[in-house]
Image (cartoon, rainbow, N blue to C red):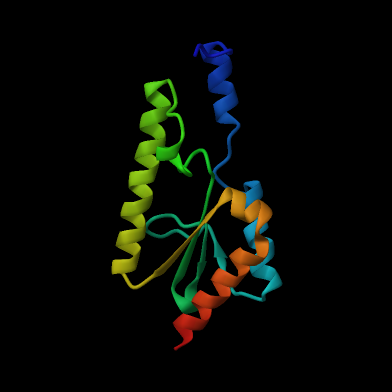
Length: 136
């Protein structure tokens, strides 16, 4: 499939995609605030999680469905090699970072964009369950 934008226009469009304060990050922030969690947003640490609950050593990632490959192997792959490589590299990096953080004693929670948008209570319950587990 041919891109509908020129190379310059595509570059401009892509430059507008944020990595911080995205809509799903702000939803997670609201959820954590609603359950009175002490959290740090975008901490400067290995793996760059979106949030950490320092006292419990819980790292939270909010993953966009497209960028992080939700059901990637069940769907038709992107036609352009660039996008295929981008998404697959993100997926490999996500697994590696989660594994490394767990080795360092962190619990890692990853939430998909569609869950944050449509299943808030499920996300909150997972966080509360993890907090409870880490207290014992």
